[in-house]
Amino acid sequence: MIISIASGKGGTGKTTIACNMAVSIGHDVQLLDCDVEEPNAHLFLHPIIDNIKTITTPVPIVDEEKCDLCGKCVEICQFKAIVILGDTILPFHDLCHSCGGCELVCPVKAITETGRELGEIEEGHLDGLQFVHGRLRIGEAMSPPLIKKVRTYCDADKLAIIDAPPGTSCPVIAAMKGTDFVLLVTEPTPFGLYDLKLAVGAVKILGIPCGLVINRSDIGDDKVMEYAKETGIPVLMEIPFERKIAEAYSRGDLIVEIMPEWKNKFQELYEAIKAIVY
Amino acid sequence: MKELVIISGKGGTGKTSLVAAFASLSSNHVLCDADVDAADLHLILDPQIKKQQDFISGNSAFIENEKCIQCDICRDLCRWDAIGANYEVDQIECEGCGVCVHFCPEQAIAFPENHCGEWFISETRFGPLVHARLKIAEENSGKLVSIIRQESKTLAEENNIDLMLTDGPPGIGCPVIASLGGATAVLIVVEPTVSGKHDMKRVLQLANHFKIPALVCVNKFDLNIEQTLEIEAFSQKNNLDAIGRIPFDPQFTKAMIEGKTIIEFNNNSESSQAIRDIWKSLEDRFQLREV
Ligand code: SF4
Ligand code: SF4
Image 1: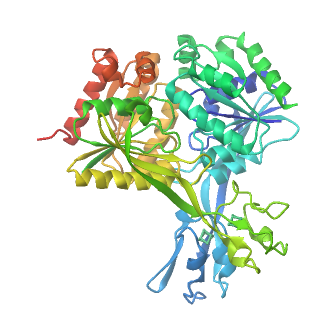
Image 2: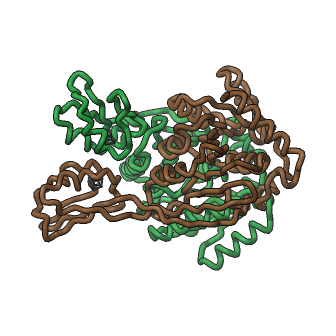
């Protein structure tokens, strides 16, 4: 089973939920941090890293000897990633979406592919937990291809918990698509509610069952609760605001480390999700 | 024309509340909500929309089944496995590259433009706001950010306004890159947590990469003084101005619920005082005051 943990609004506690749940379950579990722009789960889990891989995406290089400046590649490229300037052909690797179109249309076979670095994937472990995260290269604009690469580490025999990036656009979709359940983490504030509605919209498009965790559940108003009732989205967990939790988080400590009684609640959360999915 | 972009790397550090507070302190500016993916500034500013425009960007492939001869050429060429079992294009996977469109021997694939959202020019009690709504599950947020920043700039120039205040998106990917280019400075709002610090460093590297001067302020600084001191020490070592600290204050949430900025909600609170000091130091540094 694959559970993705998402939120719309950032900073609501996705990573906290993902890490605490993974550690509470403890065995046959994977944590895949797909927030590749700002991966944080490793700061809480301190996994032992066993393997680091550089991930690239194909981009064109042009053999100027062969190129006769016919312009067919420029024509097919939807992303203005290859242009003719005077009598030179110039690929702009940063803009390239790696579709391979230019290579396919080139009548003189002047185009081959090289790689643009997207970032790194680090793989590690912590007791019975397998850890994987992606780290987007600074200056790289496109995170979905790297997120999809992290997703390929999902092991069908294990429970995979995916820490998704914030928002509702393509990076989150890449992290949630094809997962069995989306756990949405929100806070009971106007920003939290507004962004939650957008996130629910995204989950609906993908047609995945979802449930809610309300974090800092006593800091705001009742609107998130009312929304959950109206839409029939189950509230699976509420975590009240406690300075002790906020401080533990600030140090990089897990809730279950400072309050072991929460371990049960996270296991129950997982059971509740299983009951919905199966 | 000056532009201050407020970002955070990590989401939820209080960036938008701070932008709203600055808006109530500054007298002459254009506001730009570049967090197009989860735009929240309007929830405090209650904008009256004056102009609305569609955001059209990119194309998507649609196979016209009556023309399709099921030759599978498109399936072999598509690098996103977007061609489904029944020769329909998975719109979530389709990258809009047009390769299938070009190579389809029957010209059976249509390639219309995408309507990805809307952008708006609005009036608020703190001056004009340019903002947008990206459709859910859409791409091209970077392009939308570029459009609304350009519109904000034009609006400012037309009205002889000298300052743009931009609420930037979280992360370090395409919308963030689009919100940084050409900015006067970026203010990084960080919280004193291990994640906050980690994410600040990455977004700072990005600012350095694009040679945009960066400043730092610590929000909820008293949640973890040790982390706050580490962030400030790191800033000093890296020639990064740490221009202030804002205390943890539940009134931010209360203000948000009433649709007010923290300054409007309680002008005398410690946090309001801290924000005023930060704003003043930004004004001095970038000569933002009108003469
Ligand atoms: S691979 Fe595709 S996106 Fe990249 S330059 Fe060639 S045509 Fe353009
Ligand atoms: S336009 Fe490109 S991504 Fe979309 S279906 Fe065709 S080949 Fe695949």
